[in-house]
Image 1 (cartoon, rainbow, N blue to C red):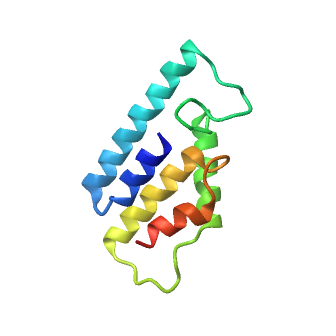
Image 2: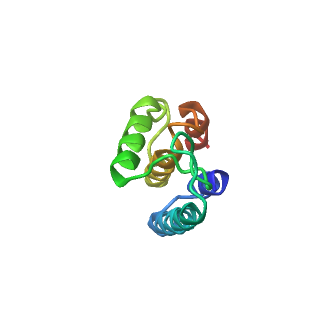
Length: 112
């Protein structure tokens, strides 16, 4: 679900945590896909787990759009863990950006 993925992305500080996030996102996506087979959502709303993106193309476009709309803080000193966390937040935003999240909400998480 949305909040679980955001929380997992906020904990990403290295490659292993990033991989765990990717695995969690894959399981969440598959869970939603299975739910949609049983009872499809409206094409005008998010899926059961909150995913807006119905294809890899939509997902990547949403992630890129969010990343451009919510650039990293200019005054923060970059370090390796921040780069992993930023990448994680971009991916999570790609799943939900269109409907459920505002750039400011997710961006605030990347500054922690």
